Each structure stands twice: as structure tokens, then as C-alpha cells.
Length: 610
Image (cartoon, rainbow, N blue to C red; front, top):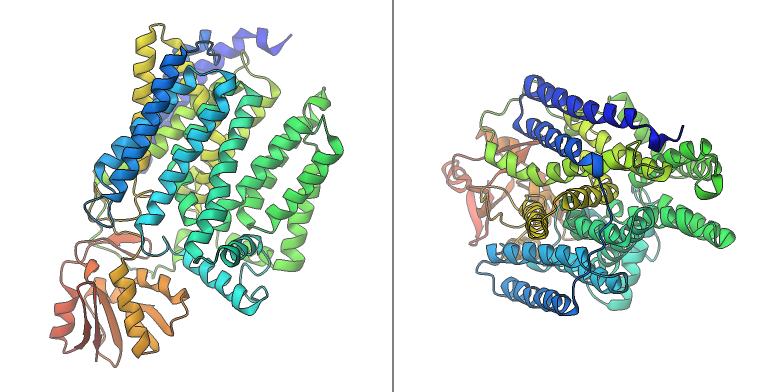
């Protein structure tokens, strides 16, 4: 019997998803006791209920096209709002905070582009895709132009590695990335050709390639699996995803490598049957590039290819499913061969396994050390995660469609499993407190689940018969989702507009200038807060040591030393052993009371000596 004719299984799975979601929600509420986990269950339950009522006549096809006049109005509105967004960014009232009207404008652009997608024609899809890419570049680069230096900790290390590569004229040795240099070679080449700094070079190489290629390949995959409108909406939702935005402006190897995976998937699925030799050669080149870029991305790719190969092996019409076991085995052998005999990565993996991936072993939290001043408000936890969890939960509607006996085919079923796998690994890590670098897996999940998410939204769209209600629903979902994504702390790496206590992950020009001024007079160790350790990767002659534990305990050791205190420490969260806390005193006054001499002072920072 054809699986599409077996409605018994379809009805069974509808009830199964609802009751599983209900059980999942109760389990998280009763045994985890965390509002974030409970929200996951509630949103998943809502998605299951929506699928229960929409599944009988679910459709992902939209045939409506708008008149030329409406299209012109939409395009002009896009250009006008984008201009207003640039103006609001340029005339922001505070230097390191994006204004609220900026977020409103960007969310409206998302809504307008979503409407344009629903009523556009195939001939205009390149224009819409171009609008999506421009919007993605604008969102990402806004964060970079707003910050004086780099954002986060990893980019500072990669800056040092790339700088050493250029100065030494060969790949630096004895680094974790000495055997994975492709990212740094590309940035270094751009740096030398453009004669710009590291940040601008990563923008025009890594960030640009990531946003453009990911948007294009997700569009092509969505179009291949379903139709061009699914592809366009998937691309729009991808550049809206908070982890994708975050990875596009921090620009690290892990953010760059998945582009190769998407390219391989599209080539092997779409092009291989037409140009077998050419597609195989290109795929092998991309495969080697992926292995030479990042280990975790290569591991995710191996899992993805293996899932495809498993279903290929049980498919009768193998010509329509060209990712074979041979291809996956070749990739896995090359990957583990490089790790075992060249890079030594297998030893690090073995050490992580021996620790059981425990978070305490990753952060070296001392036994018995407890924090009494943890500052994590319920509203902060909810708003930090609501966009991410809504993204994943709504994508389950598309997942249900792609695995449904009534609507699924083997390819859509496989793509659904590929999307859910990194989501499961990331959430399993979060719930069990076993560190497998959760945020990286969620980045992979958002890439692959953007297609099921667009499927879910279009199913809801088609279930509404009133045309005006369709538009209202679409605008409400897209604008709400983009708003929660853009205002999440993960994307707001400067001063947070909604949660001013949250510490920014970048430095002000005044703080950097203070460090450069001190380094011109002194070379040696300096004690400071943990975030300043990022600057240890600069070649300035100063080595920074963390005194976060001393600051938290208010037990600053009195001994000959230099202590660098940022004015920003007051009223902002600091991290210690993966926890956040607020100081309840002024470190400057405390050091003065302990008879430390202030030998440098500015509005941004002070340097003390004892």
C-alpha cells in the first residue's frame, strides 16, 4: 500500500505529536523547574495543536500573484524603510546602543518582504532574494560598524593568528588552528589585497560570503524540495535567525564552514544527475575545504551526510537520491584521518569524552564555590530565549508535514531528520548540562530548520481563508519573530536596550585607547576583569589576568601588582565560572581604601598599583 494512502498512520501521528508535546511540557515543568524549559514545552504543544487542526488540508502551494502596482509599492516601501534604517543607525543618540526605531524599521522590512514573497512571481524571485541578502548584510554589519573593536572572544584569537600569518609569511605552528587554516588564509588574502584591518577584511570576505551563500543555497534547497516561495521565505527566516546573525558578525571558522555543507548538499541533490563528473569533483573540493576549516562543522556535516546515506541505502530509485554510502564513508575517512594523523584533534575529543562533556570540567568551577548574587531575572530569561524557541517550535509544524505519511516523500523526510538532529543535540546538552558547545549546534539547527519553519508558516497562511486575515497573520508572525530575534542579547552585543545591566561583548574606543596608552608606558602583567582577557591576543606587551573571583568575594589581595578597573564594571553583569553577577560596591573606592595608588585615570578606566 502507498504510504500516502494510509490515513490511519497520519491520524495516529497527529495524536501522538500532541500527547508527546503535552508530556514533554509537563516533564520540563515538574523536573527542570526553569521557566525557559517550560516555554519550550508550551510552544511545542501549541505547534502540535496547530498541526492537529491544519493537517487534513495542509498545503504549501501559493498561487496568488499581486498586480504590478502593488509590487512597486512594496519595493518602494522596502527602499524607503532601508534608507530610514541607515539614517537611524547613523544618527543614533548613544554611540554603542542601537536605537529602538532601528529595530522597528528592520522588523517592518521583514514583514514587507514576507508579503512580497507571498504575492511575487518566479521571474521576480532574484529581485526578492537580492533584497533579503541586502537586509542580512545590513543587520550584521550594523553591529560591526557600531563597535570600536571586535565582538566576543574568539575573533580576537583569530585576529592574532591571522596577524601572525601575515607577519611570519607562513602558517603559525603549535596552535589549534595550525592544521585548519583555510579561514585565516582567506581573511589574510583579503587583508593584504584591500589593505584594510582585520575587522573590515572579515566583513568583506567571511561575513559577506556566509550571508550571501547561505541565503542562496537555502533558497535553492527550499525551491528544490517544495517551490520557489518556500525557498524565498526560508532564506528570509534564516537571516532573521539570531544565531545566524550572531555568527555573521563574529566571523569565526565555525560560522563559515556550514556554507560548504549547504553547497555540497545542493550539488549532490540537484546537479549530480545532470553533471555527474563535474559535481563529484566540485563536491570533493568543497569536502576538503570543509575539513580544513573547522572540526565541529565537519562533524555536523558527517552526521548530515550519513543520515542521507542511510535513507539512500533503503531507497529503491537510487538515481533520485544521489548521496551514497560511498560518499559519506569517504568524507568520514578523510575527516578522521586528518584529525588522527595531522591535527591531533582526536586526542582533544577523547579528553572531552573522558570528562563526560560536563560543564564544570569545561569551566573549572571550584568545588563548593557558590554565587549568592546571581542576577538572572525571569523577564530576561524569557525574552532571551523566546525568539529562539519560537523559531524551533514553529518549525515543528513544517517537520510534521515533512514526515507525515499523507504528505511526505523520502527526500522531505530525510531533510526533516537532518534539521531535527542538531536541535536535539543542542537541547540535550542544555537539559543534561553536558557541554557539546550548544550554541554551535543551534546555529546548525537554525540553518537547516529555516525550510521547515517556512513550510509551517505557509501551512498556517493557507489554512486561513480570509485574504485580509492571511496578511495580518503573516505580518504578525514575521514581525513578532524578527523583533524577538533582533532584541535578544545574543544579537545585541553592544549596550542592551531592554536590559541595561547585561554586559556588552565589545569595547569602547575609550577603553581601547586606555589600554594602548598604558601599554606604551608599561609591558607586563596586569590584573583586571575577565572580559579584558580578550585583549591578551593583541600584540601590545601586556598580559591580562582575571581577578573576577577577587572582585566578587571583595577580597582583593594586597601585593605588588597593577590592577586595571573599567568604569563599566559598575551596574553591569560580570561572568564568573559561567555565572552572572552584579557588584554591590565600587571597585575604585575599594582599591583606594586598600591604599592602592591610582597612576592612570580616565572616564573609561583607571590603573592602580600597590
